[in-house]
Amino acid sequence: AEAAMQVCARVPSLDEALRLVSVLRSIRSLRSNTPALEDAYTVLIRRFGVGEGTEKGFAFARLVASQSKDNTVDQGMYGALLRMCAVAKQQDKVRQLVCMAPFGDIGEYRDAVG
Image 1: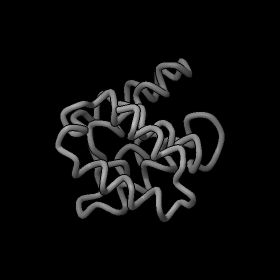
Image 2: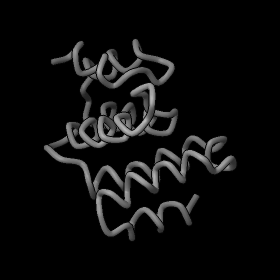
Image 3: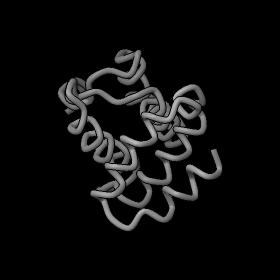
């Protein structure tokens, strides 16, 4: 888990970050360790997300989702977004995310909350 966070902290570009997400998703030990994925994605969101506050997370999640064939995020990204919204005390976004469980289509979330 710590190693994944360190790698995420050193990624030089957004393109490399998106490729790294694909690699992280393919590592079985990380897929079964959602908190480690959440932490790794949080590092990437802070570095490469665009916007203010939680919008940084959703902007990055939309980019990640656009790389998947079904426009969805994995449990780690979902958890990172949920955690960010809870910390920011944005209950409306938390409710919308909970309604998307499990994980859901980020496009559906965007359409629901504008």
